[in-house]
Image (cartoon, rainbow, N blue to C red; front, top):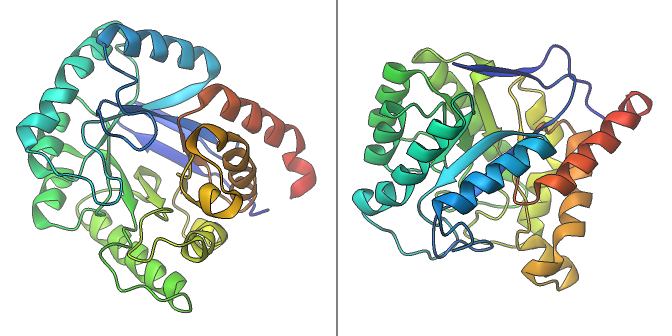
Length: 282
């Protein structure tokens, strides 16, 4: 297991001690076409009830997403994307004023509207790849999640980890240049995002968690119910919880600390089990 020393994820209103424990980052998809839970969060009341329940289970961060990023998804306008998010965001902030909220978007206009509305974390699947996004980071100083989006690279198995390493190190440098600290930057290997989209590529990315944890920035584990479980075990979405938890447990041991999930209750049980045994794994 990669030993974490004084490792934190920080932001404008939070400081999570990742040395002490991994944290749960709950996915709230507000889209009708998300790969797993599209349409589930169909009313503000349902989302508020879900957040209250998941706070009780131990979720630390809640991420709102207004459009799908699954392969071959249909893009939508910034107005439509924001229109899906805004009513939920307003209601959540009213009922849970101290909640830590993230926004899953790669759209400049939506990112800016979210930051103006008090979002603390921006998760960009394109890794803040434009000057406009960097300007917004400099202006509003959010914490960020940068993902390696393999759809934008010509990946090869034997050079994949080096390509990802170069990408993350360059991205971290650019974000530091506009004022962020390493503790405000989470890196996501982008499991499930690839031009090749094969089990081989996903496995390489998951195993590279140890390498990425050595950068001294928090590493996200974002594999919840993804297609690797279909390819490996021929499992449909409803049956992918157990392999998700098993792979998450190994990635935690490799240094992953921010666990982005659909299944909060079960993930909390996983974290509690890890914390019980972590001293024996050092």
